[in-house]
Each structure stands twice: as C-alpha cells, then as structure tokens.
Length: 409
Image 1 (cartoon, one colour):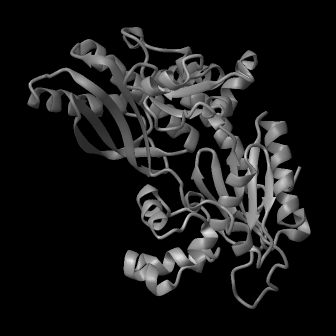
Image 2 (spheres, helix red, strand yellow; image 1 turned 180 degrees about the horizontal axis):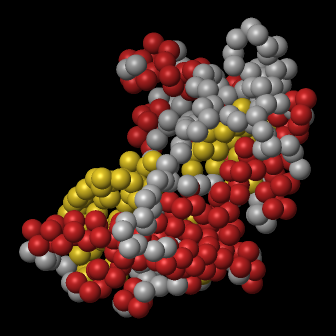
C-alpha cells in the first residue's frame, strides 16, 4: 500500500524538471451506484439494472448498468421512460448513505498518492502526480495501482485516463470504460482526439454539435481543421476555445480541494402530492437525521438551514435561516427547518406538496457547548441510528410515517 502524505508536485516553474510523461489522471468509478448495488445483490450481475431517485413516475434515473444502456436507458431519464425502453430491467431505489461510505474510501485512496486531488463528484476526480514518480512510479503505474486498490478495497472497478491535462484525461477515461486504462502521450493529444465524435469533447453540447454538423464537421479532428476565424464568426469568443480544445490544449490546473461540498441536503419527491402535515413533518425529520449523519461523516456543521418546497405542477420555493452557531445535530436542524416549513406552508394555503427538502449550508468546523441540563443521550441515539444506516443502508432505519405511500428519496 502506498505511503500516505504529500509529494512534491510539479508547479509549472523552473525549480523542478518537467515530467517526461503524462501526469494528470482522471479516475472514474464505473456505473458507481449500480456497481455498489451488485456487491450486495450479486444475483443481478449480467442483468439490466437501473438505480433511480424514486421508483414512481416522477423518479429520475441516477445511473444504470451497461446492459441497460444498450436499450437506450441513461442517467437523468424519467423512470417511466426507462421502463418503456427496458421493461425487463431491475429498478432499485438509490441508497446514498451506502454509496457515500464507498465514495469516501475512494477519495481517500486517491489522496494516498498526491495532495493534488480535485474531486469532480462522488465517483470521479482529477489528480496531478507530477513529482511523485520516485515514490509510486509514473502516471501509468499510479493509474494501474489505483485501479487495483479500488477493486481490492471497495470491490468495484474504475476507469482511468492519463494525459498532460484534465480535458484529454477525461476523454481518455471515458474511452477506456468499463474497467480500462488509456494513456495519451505528451504531444499525442490531437492524434488521440482526432477520430473521436464531436460529442466526446467536453463543451460540445447538442446545439453546438448540430451547428457544426451543418458545416460538415462530425469529428474532433475535423473541428481542429476549421479555420479559427470561421469558428469565431459562428461562436464568438468561444470559437478560439473550441479550436484549442479540439487540439487537446487545456491549461486549467488540478486544484486540490475543489469540489469539496459546500452544502449537504436531502429531498423527497412524493409519488402523489402530499397534503398530510404529519407525513410532511415526519419526512422532514428523517431528512434532518440523514443530513446530520452526512455532516458528521464530513466533520462539518452547518450554520444555515434551508427548506425546499415544490408545489404542483412545478412551483418551487426555498426558505433559509441562519442559526447563531453551527450545528450538526438532527434535532436542531429539524427545529429550524420546521419553523421555516410551517411559515412557508401557511403562506401557500397549505397546498399539497410535490417535493420537500432540507439542506445545511455555510459549513464550518463543528463547535458545540452543552446547554444547562443538557445530556449527550440524544447524541448517542443519533450516532446509533447513523451507524446502522452506514452498515446496512439508508433505508435500514426509518420513522413510521416515512413508510407511507411508497418510496421517495
């Protein structure tokens, strides 16, 4: 196992010798949520599996297995549409607490190799390992070691792209999926990108691709061959950026700590619009407990509590309150959120609610002083509940009212 601790990364100045090979890695866990579900449901391997935030008609696909993708299912797709495309798929509700433990382990593995780790989500990150070669080998060797450790310590697979910059490494990791490794040598960026379709290049969305297709441009190499002036006339100041990216030129550095969560939140979309005050209060209470557990895992406390309500058809409002001191206690989060809810719901004629959510922002280091007569008993209860959810999943312990009328998230 690699030694923990920082190594001297290349900073672009002449005080160090520039690395001879590519040192920027993009590491991406393969179908992360599905992969985690297959660990506890191995009987589903080889089947089309869809993990969604809610399994009713208002649910949205979070991710799906590669078997499901062959039917056209993809993330952010409504669950109803996914069922139409792949009616034989197995649909599972997302268990964020369960995935969160693995995500923390994943990012911990990455930090064993370099302090320059830039998270890009729960299941992916960029690393710059320049200066770490004497400890762990070159970029390709480190990528291989990370993939082995993810498999051994978490039980799932990761795909890695290695190149001289974040843009090309991202494309390379996508090209290596699933469970692969692609290394693009320094100076070979344009040759690697050239044959690939336009949509593989970050920054190229459907509309941009449509405009470029009208110009006869369908690959990244064809985009690189278009005169810069012509691109600028069609896309303005972004024309030059398109040209540079098509050649694999990208100078944004890997920034340690970027992507660290600035908020923690949970929300639920109801299968049917909810009008029961008891039900809404119970769900809000459950969300406070889960947000509190997430804060504890991150070693943070939140000073600002935010309530989110959505009324049909799609009218959304948020309300926030800043506490005198930061808190990570479920009771205090719930008390503040409940005050916001009761006021906001009354102001909106106590209409049925389509979605309710609770969040903590303005995150700080936890600091707490017991009030007169206060004990740590409720802390112990909260810690016990959090431990059960960490071990057995978010749905292992729920309040009774949360079990009514079907799942949500």
